[in-house]
Image (cartoon, rainbow, N blue to C red):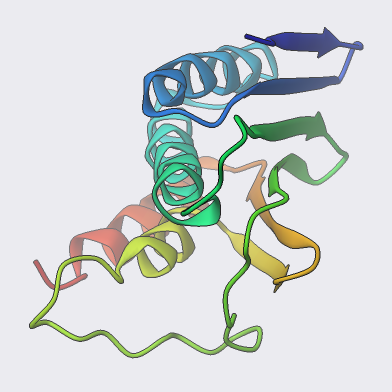
Length: 161
């Protein structure tokens, strides 16, 4: 088993086996980093859900039919505008919709809501995916003022349940 964590001031990088039992480890490490950056608890909770969903998607989909024990990498960095989180795998990739396009959801099957959930929780989400290179999802949470926080929570409350 390989586990690596690098902390360099305003940046951490984790590399763990791509297995479900490490989702919680990644979520906790990212939450601790976000807290050390001074993000409010509500933002940290949204980040925790988004990172859990992103890494769970890698565990479920990226390395299907793979004989080796692959890893997933997570990078977090602090920038002048907010927190940036990247989840990187070298799995089989998927057909990613263009930026700004919300994928269609088939309510008759399980799954398919992960990207929609992540986009609703984070301020900006982009991803690149291909069968040859795997997938890189990049999520950003901006530094907030109290007025902007109220508006964000009103938007989340309006989402269908």
